[in-house]
Amino acid sequence: MTQTRAALRPTVLTALLAALLSVLLAPAPASAASLQEVTGFGSNPGALKMYRYVPDGLPAGRPVVVALHGCTQNAAGYASGTGWITLADRWGFSVVLPQQQSGNNLSHCFNWFESADIKRGQGEAASVAQMVDRQLADVSGDPSRVYVTGLSAGGGMTAVMMAAYPEKFAAGGIVAGLPYGCAQAAGTAYVCMYIGATQTPAQWGDRVRAARPGYSGPWPALTVFQGTADYTVKPANMTALVDQWTNVHGADRTADVSDTVAGYPHRIYRGPAGNAVVETYSITGMGHGQPVDPGTGDPQCGAAGAYFLDVNLCAAYRLGKAWQLG
Picture 1 (cartoon, rainbow, N blue to C red):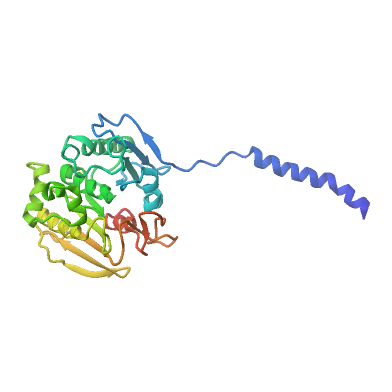
Picture 2 (cartoon, helix red, strand yellow):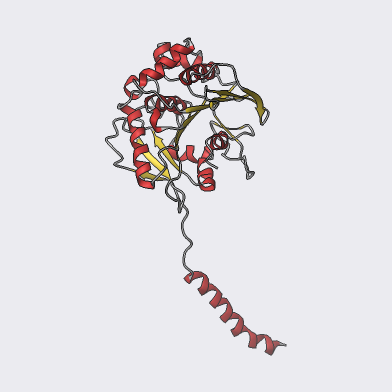
């Protein structure tokens, strides 16, 4: 028996060495897509940084989503925390992630309240528009299927992009954000955030129309997510957003659909043509942050963390479905 084992040892050793060599010499697997910084995307008057995520093998003609982070956040954290990267891989679209710099705002908030940054052709709004143009050119994206979304200050800047560059966006998604022109109406950003500005629907709509003089449409559709226990951006801002964008679309303020999604009140407002122009999710008991639903199920996405709140509803998934991304 001892002699038999000894005879087998060289054979076993040879087999182990062969297996080891096959692993070492095997070609490396193709690397997965990753977040990349893009430079030279235009004159960049707002001095922002541009990052993007493009799934491997993405074909031409696919949608583009612009995702704007909140204060104290950055592009990479927002990309992963929201679930947009997971959905981009699953459904096949690219993501543009603007990033604020401390030289513009010490808290890394997009300047949704600064007149120099919210007007067409100026500041941060112009920088984001240039990112969209660069992305469409680089990936041969579908210019009729560009969407913009953001959290908090990023939500405020989402309203800016929808108002100042409505021809570039099919729809927008505002999470705990504010209506366009709110700081001008309230006199200060803090009144907007903590109280809410008092304007009629027509006054709110006029602020949007003034951002793009002579534009006759189509205007982007809007989806809003708002926590009822948000004390940083008060729920009054969702009401103002509904007033503003139903007015822009020529719709009334009576919801055509009132139901629940994942147990939360959900409303749809239709325009004169019968299409959904404003949609709202009122997240009962949620504070200030992005709704996420971590997990591997079909409607699940995102990762819980600071300002990423696990409420069993993923805002990115709901937006993607509304925009027919997947």
